[in-house]
Image (cartoon, rainbow, N blue to C red):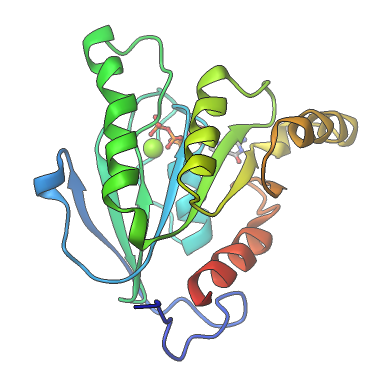
Length: 205
Ligand code: GTP
Ligand code: MG
């Protein structure tokens, strides 16, 4: 059945009425059974997933952030307006995580996407504006394309770049991207409206 946001037409105009942390799931059996659409956030460790979720929702500490990579090691569910979920996936590619655990992340994310394919309205794949997309970013993007999951790229931490740096980054990103790319900053709010526009569009589709 197609997902409906109810009376909320556009979250870029309409207030977010409620947000709450639902659960941190370490395995499929832990995942909440709440109905409705999901917007997933994925990207390498420390790229700014949890910060972007907080900025989008106008909350500060709802999603826990950290300057040490590998903070989010579970799949974290946040319920928005009691209608749909923001889902914070564990970051990949952090070298200091033990090999044994690192090896589990790929299959874990892949099986999550498979299990939730029907309810994922949009995936937001984050890449750091200051670095070239990594091989794993490419793998993630290819999975999304193969599974026909609608997605956008959020090019994070753009506040750390000069105007020239941004132009150069976006030139590189355009070559990599197989979907729309938005420059974002969870510090100064750049691109937040644009991300919401995409979320809106995906939720009401
Ligand atoms: P994991 O949970 O480890 O996968 O990390 P994450 O992707 O959730 O990153 P998180 O949001 O915890 O942010 C990592 C670090 O980057 C923190 O120190 C944040 O304050 C910082 N950060 C995140 N977004 C931005 C941004 O837009 N600009 C700047 N300057 N710093 C940011
Ligand atoms: Mg995180």
